[in-house]
Length: 296
Figure 1 (tube, rainbow, N blue to C red):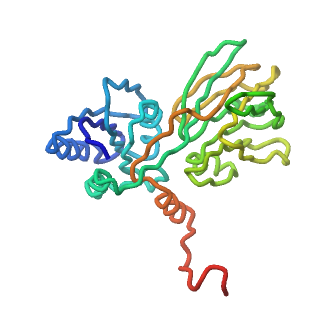
Figure 2 (cartoon, rainbow, N blue to C red):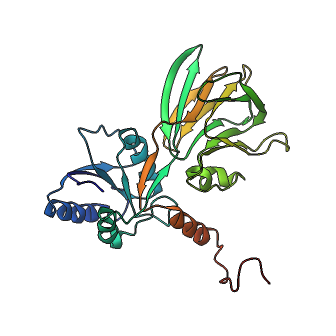
């Protein structure tokens, strides 16, 4: 681990004790001659980095980490996710243990997890009208009473492109395109698979499909997923990124979703923490295994 000279704190002020913990962390970092800057996050806002940071402390829950990842992953800044919410799949550091974990990371002992992110681009009449990135998912959903969308889905291998492969036609309430990190969020609630967080794969998961044979699928991360909205729709359409950023869509829009060239870097939020959260949240703990695997 290189020398830490400047740290950013993203403090979710909607979380209890976030401000006091932020002051504690600031004081300790300054004692170590590390310059700090705090951004107070209330679920909205648009932080513009004013220079280089060596790390970022995310003080909140998983939603705060999602915001930090979209802001800082393009800059290659590792995120230290301190959990002030309920048990999270991403925010794994207990607030009372932050200093021990931080020192472990400084010694090069704490894991650094690389998480796949997605780039999302909306094209309308051949022109790009919106761009974004996400750590969890991009969701295309119907609005209003008649919640049924019609869309075609294709994929193209990257790099090199080539002829698109048609994956299918969907009539559904919407479509989720999720990362492995996002597999435990909205996608799993909609019947999608749970993926190891460090896999290089993308989930395509229809929401309440009209045809029961339309099932979730997993494609390689080098595929660009292309969603084309048909010209006749019964409802308004919304694109939601990480549950935090929205964009109105129109019939005939095309949405291109591909792997971002930069991964999110999460400190002390490795596979072991992920599976521990799974066992706790999904009540997989059960009894302990005895004997050797594969033997009665």
